[in-house]
Length: 176
Image (cartoon, rainbow, N blue to C red; front, top):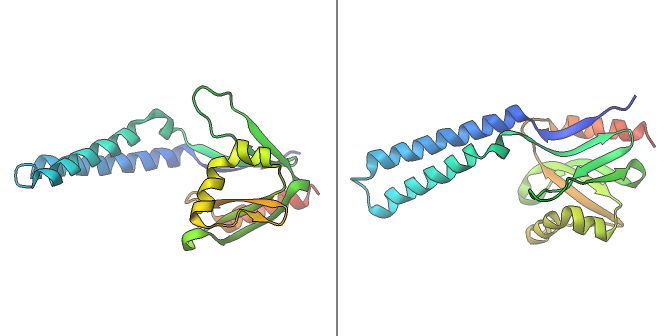
């Protein structure tokens, strides 16, 4: 039996986040409407701009769908490419033999998250994780541990990290 695990922000969670953004947008726009006459023009327009930005994010259809960071099954871990609308979706498949330690640890900025060591080529790093690698260099997070590239995800409010780590280790142990 092939068990499938998804590390994701579910659609209901994305809708909750977008609803919160819409609420914040409404507050900013209401503040603009109420204070526009009595406030300096810079402050009143700041409320207007912030309200519109939050509204645009809240109303963008792709933000309501949820998103999957990676999936895991008996064959390994699978990372979707970050898509642009013109590209075909691709997936990086990493077999369990090429997965090192999976840990719940303190990441950059003192934030807890999950780290996964992957034995993958530089070409795969460039194709699937180039933005992640650049961000990690800027933040000072060491992305290489020996021959493993480390991918890390900050805490996901919709899944408990210790449970995620335990489930992944369980699937990995049953398939090595």
